[in-house]
Amino acid sequence: NNGYQQNNSGYNQQPRSGPFTQQRPDKQSCRVYVGNLAWDVAWQDLKDHMRTSGSVTFAEVMSESDGRSKGCGVVEYSSPAEAQNAIAQLNDTDLKGRMIFVREDRETRASSHSNSNNCSVYVGNLHFSVSWQDLKDHMRLCGNVDTADVLTGEDGRSKGCGIVTYQNASGARRAMGQMQNTQIHGRPIFVREDRE
Image 1 (tube, one colour):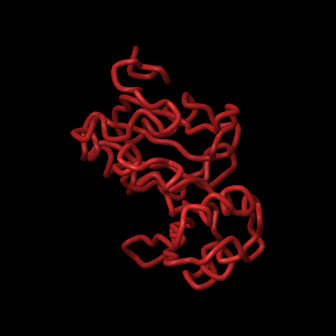
Image 2 (cartoon, rainbow, N blue to C red):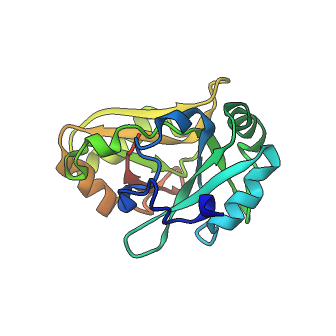
């Protein structure tokens, strides 16, 4: 089924930024973002885990240019209701020994911004006790931080991830290079470009 292939030429026009970016806005509400994936999780593992909440039409694990997993992925369901089911049922479930988080996929900006001009980074694997102030204090080592947000659920609990916006793109690039696997509250974080 072409829907599961990583290189479906029908809409993978920007392979480095993922096939979901802006080309298919009609499917936005059917997609979920999955974070904190174990490094050895493949798209098939992700699909098998996520199909318990509905019919999966596409699953992708994001990868670096060298092919290594970024520890996150995107899953597309056949309907928005199934995507909402996944967020409700599969957040904080175990996949290959790691607790994953599942949220709405909000990737809509990437293709309208040059990657080199992006001032924001996504920070994952945060300890649940990390506040926005802790995150800002840690990330300001790479440059002046405009905003730092820890993403929370409806109950106010941290989702274990956040977005940090620097005053310029060089700070964001430094953060992606220098802050990988540094620790906040005893947990190693991962940092990637924010593509939301």
